[in-house]
Structure formats: C-alpha cells, structure tokens
Length: 329
Image (cartoon, rainbow, N blue to C red; front, side):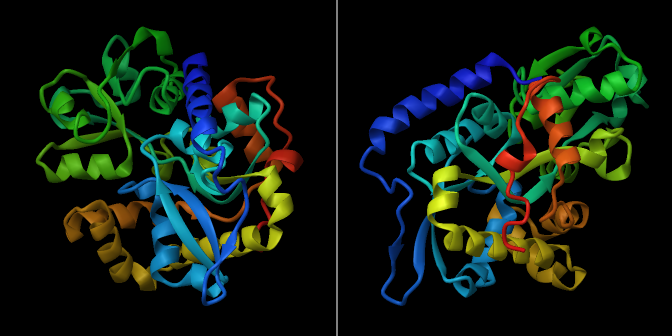
C-alpha cells in the first residue's frame, strides 16, 4: 500500500521545483523553424521502462506527429511527477505510486498511454534451496527500498500463496548494481527485480530460480491487471494543447505497436543494447520477455484495481476524470 513517505518525497520535490520553474514553460509550447511544435518530456535515462519513448524518437514517430521533443531526464518517480506539477515538463512518464498519490492529493494529473504492464520478478538463487513462494516464510527478501512497489509486489505474491507477508523480513538492497552483490553474498534469500536486473544477474553468473513472474502467470491476478508505468500530463495541458497531446499519444502508441511486432526484433535489440549500455545478447533476452509490455488500452476495471493495489481500498480516483485512455486513437 502507498505510504506517507512517498507522499512527502513528492510534495518536497514539488516545493523545490515550484520556485525553480516559476518562469518555465507553464504548459506553453513553441514552434521550431521547420514548423514542429516543441514539447518538454520527462523521462528516465537508461531505464527500460522508458524504452518506447526512445523508439518513438529513433523511428521518427514524433516528427510524423509534428512534434520535436526536448527530453528532461530524472532519476526517480517523485522527481518526474514533481517536474510535471512544477511545469518544467509538459508530459512525463509516471509510476503508479507517485502519479496516483499526487492525484489523490488533489493534483490535476491525467494518465495517458502507453500503459506499461508490471515488470517485477521474485527470484531466488538456485543454491538457496528455496523452490516455491511458500518456502519464503521466515526468510529475507531484497527490495529496492522499504515501502516501495517492489515490497508491495512481494507482499501481494506472498499473501496470494498463503504466506503471512509480515512473516518475512524485507531488506532494502537498492536496484541493479547494488542488488546484485547483496544476492551474490547471500544477504537475502530472494529478491524482487525488474526483468533487466534479473537478466543482468544471470549473465553475471548467478543462476536464479523464478518464484513469481507476472508474464508466466505465477503472480496471481496482479499479473493480469498490474501497471508498472503510464504517461502523465496535467489537465491544463490536456485542455490547452489537445492537438499536441494527441500527437504525442499517437507517436507513443505507434512505438508500442512497433516493439510488439516480432519483425522489429533485431533493430529493437540493438537499440535497447545501446540505450541500456549492455551486450546485444542480454538486450535480446530482455526484449524477448518484455516487448509486449506496453499497450494503448485501459478500462475502468483495470484502473480501479490498480488504485486499490497502490493506494489501498476506498480511494476514489474516477477513471473518467483521471485517465485519457483514448488519447491517440
């Protein structure tokens, strides 16, 4: 469930950005010399969650939509959401725990496609002797941070397998580069990582056993409805620049479809290898497991399920007000 610490991080970042961006874009756009509309986009560098955005740039989909994107990279979900609220960007990738929290706090944000399926895998070293989720009772599970989406994923999987989530100790091990040594040294019995992190650990010689993976149907109902990301804009920008927003969504929906098409595997793999700065062989494994992760569709049932999962039952973020699911269609 969403915690107050995340809310504090978002609000703190917003306070800092409000002053820094008081003279910023404010939702306004400018025209380039060749007639394109320039728009500031919040993204994450070298993060596979942002990969459709890179594809839309490389394949010229934004240009086709009459846009020139200016990328403003951030390192975390709270920074991305705060930059959007502070108007230093006009559209940004969002994580449910940050964007939904901001919506719940009264920020006028709107979710737009593409919507990214949850990308978390619960794994254990093959040497651990742990063969299923039930065996994790009383063990230690590595998560990116306490109270993070990774911990929420682990708790949901444990509960779905009849294990008391509080019977497990959750250890903050960070992500990627810091998670791997914790697993290698046996500081945790299992860990929750993104597909790219799991592939990297395996390529570095750590044999892993998957205990729960949404893509293989072993994470329960969460695998069917869970979201990892969606893109966001402000309601002011939606209402003031509808053609620009439609152009962005159209380009991104094209990128999602391009990634899902197997004919583009070689080109996508090479692009992903460059984007993540990893070997092509590793990029191919990641693409094979995740290339159908992004879609342009969303309905009220899926949205509400995610709101309940992230914020807790009883929260009200109406689908019709907070989601522009038909953007770019």
